[in-house]
Structure formats: C-alpha cells, structure tokens
Length: 240
Image (tube, rainbow, N blue to C red; front, top):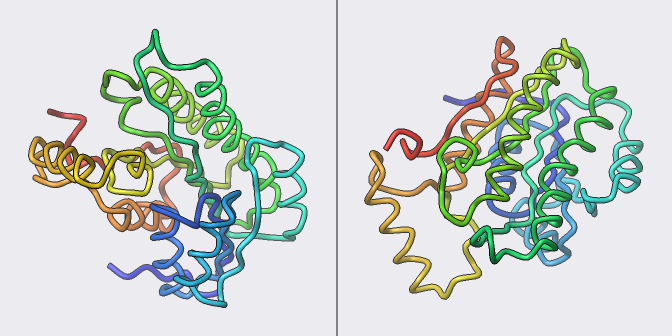
C-alpha cells in the first residue's frame, strides 16, 4: 500500500542509518518534507548521499535535553515525529558495564522522552509521535537486561502520552531482529551466520530488513484511529 504524506513535515531522529534511513527514503517517495537528525557526522554524510538534497539533515545529540529543546525551537509546526535513535548495548547482567547501561538509558529513554516533550506542542492536528522499543521488552533474551528495561519503559510511556497529548496520536513500534548497522560490531561472517540462524528459527524464516519496520511505521503514522498502540514487527519472534 502506498501512503500519502504529500507536503507533510516529518522529523526522524536517528534517520541517518538503519530503520530511520529506510523510513526517510520511503517518506520522501510519498511526498513528505523530511528532516533527519543524528549525532554521527559519518552517518549524516551517507544519508545526504542516499536521500539527496531535498532532505534536511541536522545534528542532534538526543541525550542532551538543551540540544533537543534548541533543535525543536527551529520548527513552528510539524506533522509527525519518529524517534528511532539509540546507542546499542548488550551483555550479561553481572558483566555489562554500568556506564554502557547509562549511555543506553540516556539515548533510548531520555532521548525519546525529550523529543516527545519538545515536539508535542508543535504537532498539528492529525499528527503523531512514533516511539521505538524492542522485542526484548516482550520476550526475555539473555544479555538484554538493560535494553529490555528501557524498551519496556518506552512502551509504558506510550500509553500515558497517548492520553496526555491527545489529540496528538502516540504509538510505539517494537522491532525484532533487524539486519541494520547495529550488528556491525561483529565480523561479517559471524554476523551473517548469526542472522541466518536467528532467521531460520522464526516463522518468517528470515530476520527483518529496515524497510519492513519502516513500512509499519508509515502505517501507524497514516492511520488516524491508532493511538496508544504497541506494534510488533518481529517476524513472529515474540510467539516462538
């Protein structure tokens, strides 16, 4: 299905790689006016090459409240906010460094919290906020204690914000295992092997691609009767 976002203003935080970048590309094709923001200079350059000059690309560290506030002060009105940025962090509970957990909380929880707070007053009637959690919030996975805790907090926040920010719609996307640059910490052969094994275990017989999640986000953004929803895009991971 082709969704129409002609002349709608969409801000994607974390829109210079992975899911956010795929969403930006699909929105541009649907006629949206897109701004993507990231703290990575390398990713901003790659996004510029892939998305073209028609997309605005900004610098933003979502863990800094003052930076988020200043970023949104540059917009009068917007139609949709999507927040997919996060610093990946995983490891056994007794071994994972507290600093890495704090960094995850700052980027994935506080970053989305700040973005929703400063974007909400600028969102036009009929607009939306789409937050991102993760499959670990729904299905216990070894080594994901910190991520599961933060993702669960985001899902809880979604329902409350859907009530408090109405008529702005607030929803949450919960991706499963998606083949994004977040897996680049592994050597290519090991990464491909792990993703193939995980994919074979799923009902879909493959892991997700960024475009799979991007299409789900577009559906949530376009559906004016969805608010407070948490949408799983996980290839059936939650039910196995």
